[in-house]
Length: 256
Ligand SMILES: [Fe+2]
Ligand SMILES: [Fe+2]
Image (cartoon, rainbow, N blue to C red):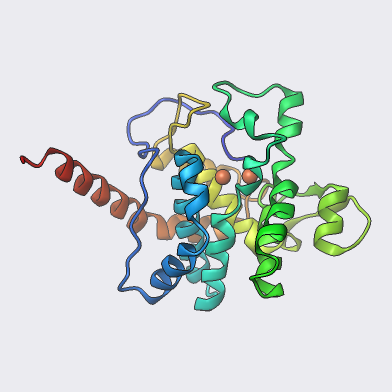
C-alpha cells in the first residue's frame, strides 16, 4: 500500500497532523541526527509546514527503526537524513501544485505526482552533490527512488534506473533486493500518512488500526521484518509525541 492510500476511516486515536516530536538529546543517536538535520531542514520547513513536520517525524521513525534493526549509529543517522528529504521532489515546480490540491488525484495527476521520486533525487543531487560524500549522497538518492517500491515487487522507471544503477531501464526490484533505506522509509512514511489528517484527506486511522494495516500488507507492500521492528519502537515514539502536545497545550494556556 502506498502512503496516503487505503481504507481510511475517521477515528479517535489518530495523531496530531503538525507536531515536531522533540528529539531525545540524551540519546547519542538522536542528538547526532538532530545536529545533522540542522544543516538541511530550514528551507523545506518554512515552505510548507505540514510536509516539514511529516518529514521530521519520518526521519526520527526511520532512525529509531534502523537502530532497532542493528544498524550502526552513523548509518542510522544517515538513514534519518535521507528519510527527512524523501519528499523533496514534491516541491518541484512541475508538480508542486498537485500536492496542494484538496482532493484525491485523478489517475493522470497521480502519474505526474509519482515523478516526485526521481525529481527529488535529481534535486538532491543538485543541492547536496558538492557537500556530501558520495556514499551519503547515494543513500539520499536511493531513499528517494525506492521509498514507494512494494516489497512484493515494483519497477524503477528508466530515469530512476539510470540514476541508481547507471543502467538503461526499467528495472524490477523485489523483496530484499529493494535497498533497505527504501524499505524502512516506505513503512515509516505510510504509517505517518495513515495516522494523520492531511490537507488532501479528511479520514485517518488510529495507531492500532495503522499497525494492523501495516501487518496486513506485510509481504506484499512492506518488508515483514521491518514492520515488526517498527511496531516495537512505536509506543515510545507515540508517548513522546503525546507528551509534546501536552507541553505545547500547557504553554498555550498558561496564564500571563
Ligand atoms: Fe513519496
Ligand atoms: Fe512522505
